Length: 84
Image 1 (cartoon, rainbow, N blue to C red):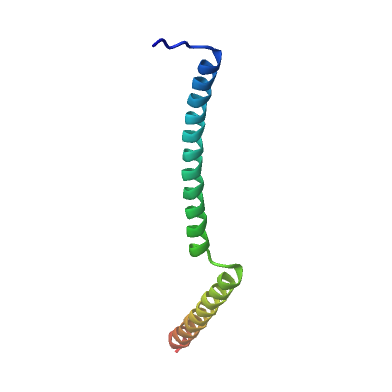
Image 2 (image 1 turned 30 degrees about the vertical axis):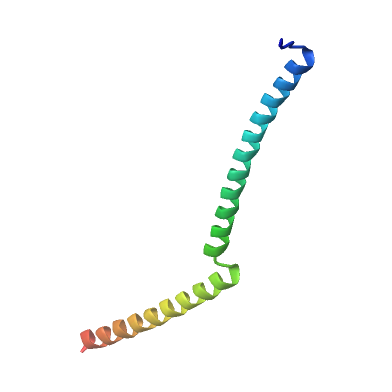
């Protein structure tokens, strides 16, 4: 039994090898896309919306204003005490 290798067999072998490497490439791309998708989901979970950040910023500013008023009050009391 003889095996005759002709052009079609060589072509089929080359196509098979090419398809194998293309499949590996697609598998790698799929894993990278999955990783990117996971990272986007993580950013969505960790990201504060503009509205929430504005509310947090307003609360911080209110607290800072209250602290400033208290410091001004203490400064005035100390100035009055020093003037006596």
